[in-house]
Image 1 (tube, rainbow, N blue to C red):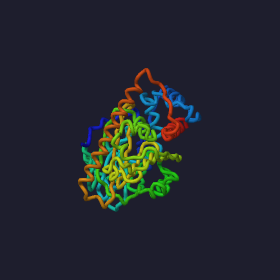
Image 2 (image 1 turned 45 degrees about the horizontal axis):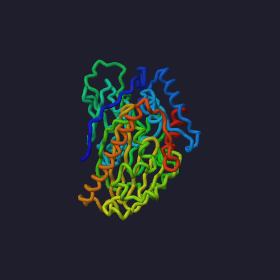
Image 3 (image 1 turned 90 degrees about the vertical axis):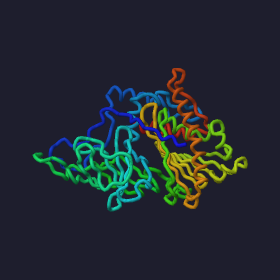
Length: 411
């Protein structure tokens, strides 16, 4: 059974204002790159916390980041500023905006956004804020011919242009062309929709974005079945009482926890074949399937499973006829939302029994991981824990993630 839960947004205070201050509004599409306005004292504290991890120590001698990385509010503010607001973020699926007028909304930190396909078929993204009095403009997902503000009825086209401003007689120095929705850079790769809140003027080229997001792994993932040919099945969302990195760490432990926490899953994998390869922004774990212990798992998992982690928070799992992706969104120092999208090879799209059984098996694994992650978060908040150690033979991807995170937080 899916665990679709209500998400409680995490409010980041003092988000830098982006509206131009002069009355002439010379650039209707201008917006400053987003940043979290940390006080000088909070910045000093969070930078000191970042420095408590040393990426130059080899994994055999290294200790993990301190527990403060996972529980301190100012550290999360620094992560939003230096990590989430400065690079490409996977936020949804092309399946959600297949047709003109279709849209979906989302939130990252304190930033509300809306993604849509306009009447000309172009994919567009905007800050989901009415330019009149800052009301949130759209909610959920669906299909519209325009966006109408629920507060005062200001109406915007799917291209972001202001189409109608109600009851503005007597307003001076007002140019309707200066009050369109503020755009966000948007790109696509395969079945994924990507946003970048930090790019203000650069033109977007999907090929260049793929190289920036995936580096040298673009072709490797494509040749391993990560592409647009798969059929979309469903989305499931989970709210978890843990820091976003706890969920990522669990994913990146090289299968270390699988035989202990996922016994059914382990029965369909040859864990002795588990391997990890590291790239600049990506780590790929792989494991052979086909264990004789479980034919049902063989049908679902196939002969090989690939688990790709794209920094900082996106995961692609390709196994048998299935691909599922999940991205992790911070909701607070000790809370996150994990969004799963499930895809399937088109030839099996009509096999409802197989689909339901596979989704049930996947759900079981997710529940097991939630229990683990929430238990770790409780332990991180204990005064008995400060740092841990890495298992060098299996936790290379986790160490790689922490090192890359350190680099972003300190430069």
